[in-house]
Length: 372
Image 1 (tube, rainbow, N blue to C red):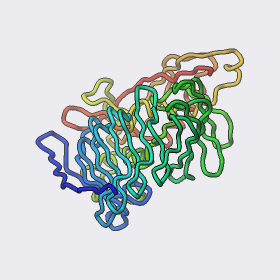
Image 2 (image 1 turned 60 degrees about the vertical axis):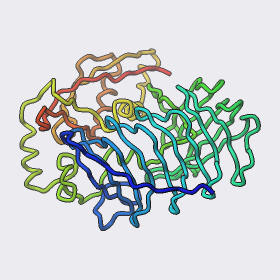
Image 3 (image 1 turned 180 degrees about the horizontal axis):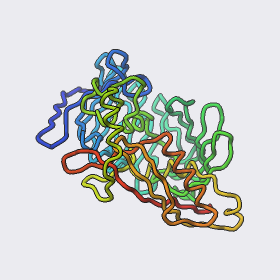
Image 4 (image 1 turned 180 degrees about the vertical axis):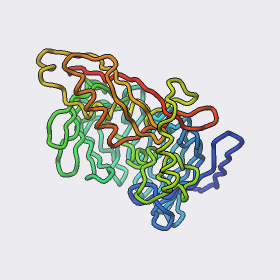
């Protein structure tokens, strides 16, 4: 059995402006909550200017047992991550580089025996081995069936399933929930994806413009990464409980009124720290792509192109004042609908000046329409 030697980790904030040693408290869904109602907590270095994790992090359960160690750089996962069981047994470990998995990742059974090992190489995930709980090989020369279940945020668990040949994905792979609803299908040849199809809640196909670097992965991220990186919070949490997050979390009524009144201040086009979506532009475009309902007339006429939309990123991160800068016939209305629907449920990190003061920023970006 693999034994974990727990070594104390010293977090050093140094003299970097805006970085603090913080403690976050989470509920069972990894949403920020009050300490008294938390199930987990995180000790970390947090960048209060960019509102992102900026160094080493450690996650614990409410009893103080270590659950995970890792690090962030530039707001993205970077370096070695280790996940632990309640008895401090290593369950999963591997490296991130710029937010993407890289190199060798190994998963273990609670007994300490290795379950599988995957090596991420560019756009491929190469399966070195897959064993059962007794340590016996499931794959023969890297060939056989793969199936694994993962937790999802406030939704049924998800299942990834497909066929491996010579250690890489081959043929059809699926991502569905435990109730059987298909979410995504992909087809592979020699480990590289040849095509994909996404489905909405009603089973209807969704057009998607953008690819991820590792489509249906054998090692899907736990939903907690997405929720914690977006700083998802529960209702009622105020800046008094997280003073270093005043510009992100809900704040007192007087501060809120002052904040709203300041929304009429000058609008900037160029700022020291530009505004941007939580999780980066790739995640933003993946979210936008899932909202597209390609206009039928435009599809019949084979109309494609880029619709450039201008909007304002307010100092509270809300998006407003949408307008078309450069349009494409038959696509403008859908582009506006998409960005407005996105803005109804998402906020951005506001632009900031050298002093760290958030400002309103004018932003222009393309919504790209392609017929798959």
